[in-house]
View: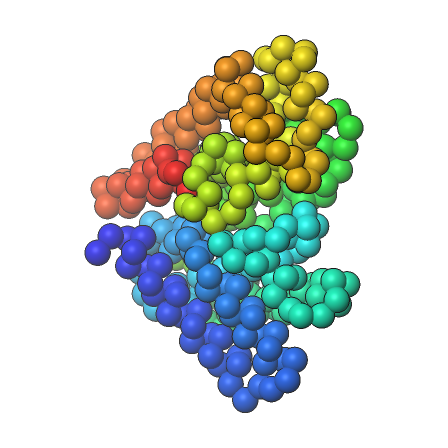
Length: 336
């Protein structure tokens, strides 16, 4: 069994045990909220963050039950962040099902209030899961501090993502910075460094050269798939990012490379709900024909290459090197 399949299954099992303990003996709104949080967390996740934590641990220590149990802290953190993100974006679909604030049957304001509180519960659970594992106290304290920094930087990235796209002031460098804070740190770099710290790796700073560019490459590819991917594989509409008004590398490259009339066509529709499929197809055609799609793919490849080139500086062990390359491929050379 390959690394991803083997340890994803173990992470899922650990999450199920955690939620079973939380649900046991509960009733009323408490049981309903935790049950829905379990359903949302278990639904279709790739377990990228736990897998990178386990991989970081493996650089210096054999994989054991302790790191599996600790790794679920990142999936609980992910649920916390996704619930808030979906409320901010007013998204309706996540992982092929309803977003969390659409899972309750009250009026909209109450649903959102419940969801914010449930997200906070998931944040508390993430700390509980990590602190509940018997690691060396110094390593555990360092990993917990890093997890707090990950959430902080993700929050900064979210603030940038909310405010910078207002008007036309956002730049390509701004988008890259958002990807660094909002995606790279909490998807790849932070989780892998947390695992490395718990495993006693002496140079976790070396992971920055792998985790940050790989996380940026991943998000650029995610933005590409968000418009040009297969809806069934993605589990959401390919029009959702465009209707939310996301100004990605794809969009900003198009603004620089397309004809003025085509740019105006896109600007008139970006961020508007209910645009026609024909108009969306024309937007995609403009992006592709002006060369923006190719340029954006090349940018993702550039960051991917940078990440892969750093692997030899992280470890000399062939199995770990191979898995670092496999994970990079899975993150960037993907269709969903």
